[in-house]
Image (cartoon, rainbow, N blue to C red):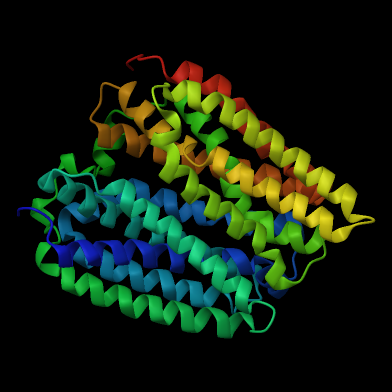
Length: 398
């Protein structure tokens, strides 16, 4: 198909950026959704994590679907499903219906993620130049943008008037870009194993778990996942700030993630990944825990100072955690004698299960004790990455 043309590159960039805006738009408004459902903290945590069930189903089945139907049909259907279900989630007051819709939403956005990454990886291989890091950076930029929008309007605009116009614009722009890309999107018979698409049969025929990589990956991602799930709720409940101010820690965290990923190679220099990761995860986990509890202590007499300390701590945590998770994809491939796509798909599937369990544990502790106590768990898990990365960096084949 040849090198990537400027128009194709712009559309790929746009749909990754829009994906970040659209799929993360509910994160800053989770306190409002929790209020709509009127459920306990524990049950709400379970409802949020239910999307992992749908995402796991997508990881196990959508490779075969993309093989048969091609990228275009999967992108169109999954994009529409994603934003229709997001629109439904903000209207629901019945938690059991919310559970079902959230599972469908998880399946939809994960299917879109699988298809668009297969397309990007294929075109990267044909073009010969790295585009994946830039595209994933744009996804994060989209998540930061949606948080910034929430900071500006959350205190003045209802949940419906915030989300409906946003997802409508995102969907229309995304469908426009997908249709412009249609001539270069992979047809069903053009998708190959080299495009990191893995069928259910391929995975189940030789499925194996590298527990060192899987548990290390879980520990690396759990605080990032918990930030998306709980940070705005923690700000509202514990620091008692307004809806708009409650989004600031999430915005700072995602912004720090971009800064960390963009500056990683420059900071790393000649050091190994292990030498980089170990001090950074210890710093990030420690700073997060200290800033949260010291901020809550200060809040009693100096609420503004307490919230500033907490927010700055979250920002530093974002920098420290920014590059850790993606490194485990490389470890998964390096430690396996299977094709890279199979090893990464297995890690993704196992991670969905482990993350679901981890989110459930945090939800139970938050309900039984308090949210700050529950957030100790992902903070300590992040510090624990230092032990897993030492073992995972060893080139053991499985």
